[in-house]
Length: 389
Image 1 (tube, rainbow, N blue to C red):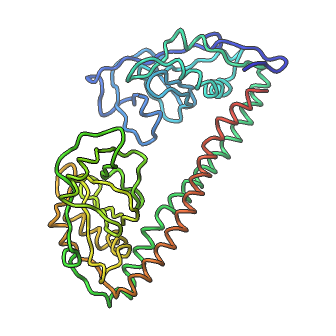
Image 2: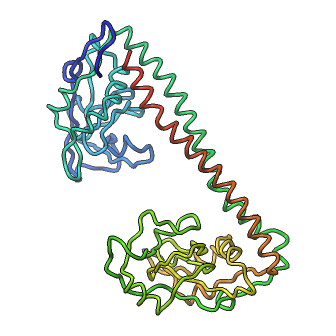
Image 3: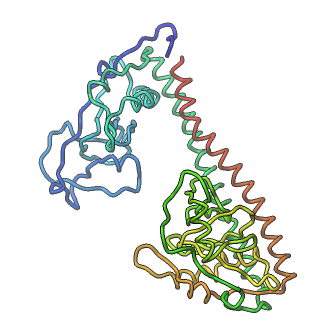
């Protein structure tokens, strides 16, 4: 902060409160009943499980509802404890403010506002933390107690409104993200489907095979090498793609080459995501991805891709997917998938209808994601303005 409002001053965190580091527990101390132990995970997630403690402890480690806590390691942030009595774990400060100088709520918001500065001073390659002397030396703006109370009260109201807006936006976004599945369920379970033939995918294709069963040597540029992570929202996503040499690509194409109108299909890890190849771009793909070459005179590739996402087919994928950990499908299982087959004219009509609905859904989803991002930026903006006087 370049300048302070009249009557304000800068104060070190160490001068306005006492910071009590939590108790150092060992796993042998953890029990299934007793007083809950507040660990960082219990501050960052309301669903996180608790360990418990049954032994003796210094009362200074006791935390009660409304206490101010500051995590100074891993996830650095300030929290107001909203729970029952508990014991504080190490790497978290219990804050006992000097109420002659500062109010608890104001200190809570002041620490949150200066958290970017705190994070800039963290140490450690894995477990990020700030040292106690560095933390205590950080300065915050300090107006009168009356002004502190007004600032905290206003921030309470503003941030409560932001939280309400955030929850509403998240609910709307979740509903929008569920619409594609709802559309596909409606199409592929409606009355019209009773007239459709059901055929195995292998009988509808000229070839179904996967990519090469080798991991190539990657290059910084060259031919894109598609894996499961590059098939996103029914499209090929080259944001985080690896590359192979043109020589290796030509060798892989001797096994199989994906062409415009073919369907890429994920068969390892995240199963059953289809993507119609809608580009002339040259690329190769890994063994985790299969290519489905349809009989074009009988099938619309976009309709088949949507059918592969229908509840009926996904249920088959769930049943056929093998593996205790990383799920995978063999080519034989993909060929055995039962696919609905209306007339080619109906396929094209239905595919166009679904494509139009999904495009509208994507537009709404993008708009809601943008709105949510703006809402998530508001707390930082409100805190900054509050401490400018």
